Length: 255
Ligand SMILES: C[S@@+](CC[C@H](N)C(=O)[O-])C[C@H]1O[C@@H](n2cnc3c(N)ncnc32)[C@H](O)[C@@H]1O
Image 1 (cartoon, rainbow, N blue to C red):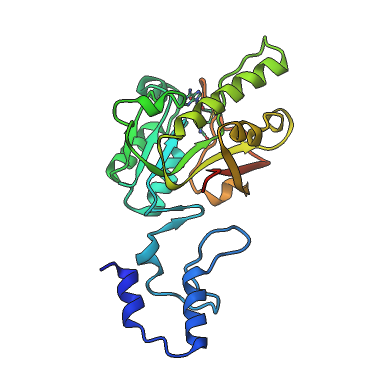
Image 2: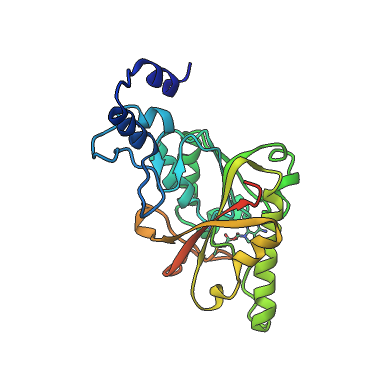
């Protein structure tokens, strides 16, 4: 019998009022962020919440099976893993090789060591546009598939429209690959800059073509992700200014 079930069965709910209080504590959402809070609507700590839902870090729970794609120096994965404590629910991947990571990111190696220590599965040289057929990933299902700041590269010689097409092609290939990898109630999260050049990618439209609907768009604030460094990628250890950015959450239309 699960913890939630045993809690429900042993608590004697005798009056409507008590039942209402119990329900509000089970379903309580922070209406600003859409995340669950460990406090019920009356502000008191629900002692079983953590047991039922694992540890939460913003949109993510240690009970979710999480796939991270296109990591830079693995600081986002490490931030999540350290919040969870134990990260055997996570698979963290990068497009880059170990040689690239060591050469370009001063924190990559220590992040990889920490991830492995916390039992996160780490995979390098994973192409988001082909991952569904990767021999170790194919057949795996995830509750959250996360690609922060997808970017196909710097194409300075190309006209703006052609550059945007290449970035959209990366996102499209990624979304196509998530189809086989998403669990029944799964979500795909893409965090993306929302102004200027990036705003012109029209992610929602790309997702729509793949039968995905936008279920939520949450302002992204780097301060809420301790240790996370948003990397340019493609050489060098520079962080880019990720303000303003949004985390887009997509689900298949049928859910
Ligand atoms: C702007 S950087 C963001 C890096 C990291 N996600 C972060 O937030 O710091 C874009 C990343 O996309 C990755 N990328 C580019 N093409 C990719 C592909 N086909 N599959 C997976 N990742 C890819 C690059 O390796 C690069 O690290």
